[in-house]
Image 1 (cartoon, rainbow, N blue to C red):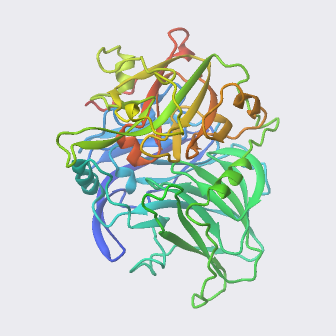
Image 2 (image 1 turned 90 degrees about the vertical axis):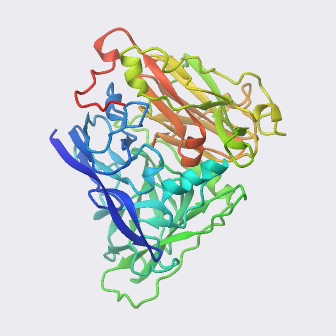
Image 3 (image 1 turned 90 degrees about the horizontal axis):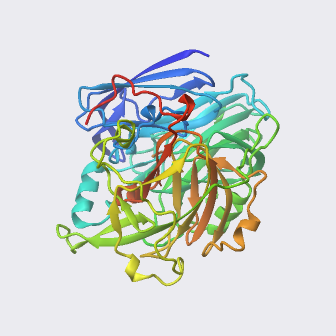
Length: 534
Ligand code: C2O
């Protein structure tokens, strides 16, 4: 194991896309930001120095940070933000994880431009699949012509969402379907006959994305830094927060092939038809050759999403077992709702909200982990309900009584090392919608999913307890449910939220306090000396 050091300077830089130049917040002036390369077992120190006017904090999405929530990054959950002129060193060791993850700003909507890949090489440098010739990262994102924070502020004044992004991007570049973007097309050069490992990351703020490469099949080998049973597909679906590794062979006639990404939207509120494009370019083929176009699915192709998701299974070998908890100590059932609360300041007197078990999370004024560690009272309560106050027909006719959400900084206390099953149930309050849920501090097993209301009597019998996919972010289907299981073996305060930034902002989030009190391995490490203060 080695010590890997990175310096991340938070600096504002002028970047131009879609014929507009604007200042954006970046790391080291790069957009997307630098890739963090790690070998399993490494100690990593990433010193973040903030030269921008915005407060900053960075989350290493998918790293478990065992006992070390201090390095997790979500602002006001595990730390106070790094203010202008301050530095904070994220210091962590990567154990038992290898594969593709990513990092992003975890404050305001700054992850719109502050994000990058994390590549963790296996200790023995070998994969449980054929060794690729080379590899490449494809980070998918969104671009706004406006200043994103301004757009969010304007929206909040009206109690409405901000404007939709103006483009999707691949490695920061929208591609030829957008104005002034011919030069902003990412090209991946490949040699005929060779196989490549592509590390695909969805860093978009609000869109689940379809991803496809014209003429080429992809073999999915890993999701969220966990190996899966390989399967072949021509289209991926990937939600914000998720990563997918695929093998692609340059086995077609040498040419230029478009790589496309566009939104999956099964609720036709405002259809987003933007398609980001990059090019798979065979070596030796001149740039004048017109690339072959991909067949992207219809924006509302839910069937494809369902069938794709069914293919995801843990590799589950002796070396990489799927340790699914078989007995459950704690059963949780959380409804996901969109609602409307009074807002005297807003244009219509109401604002949109989002909630779990009808509770819209209120961000505290200091880090919850500090409050927990130093036992500071009055910052949060631990009375987050294990299930909704009242059962109702979740996906049936909306129950207007539930549209008004309660508010609070309410956490759920979970015993250290206990096993947890959580069913996330979408509801038809305002509208059904698909929600990618992310849990900090853990991977979980996705043991079941379905449409309609979860049936406690019948559905658990159909759970996959053998080789379910293990991940850190899962899509709860539109008008459906997803059941996850994990062992709470990582003490600390761990955030859980919808990875659609819009919904996070509206309150679709909560946190678990995983309690210990006993041996040193059951406690949180002591906080680093440079931990920012609020
Ligand atoms: Cu990738 Cu709490 O986020």
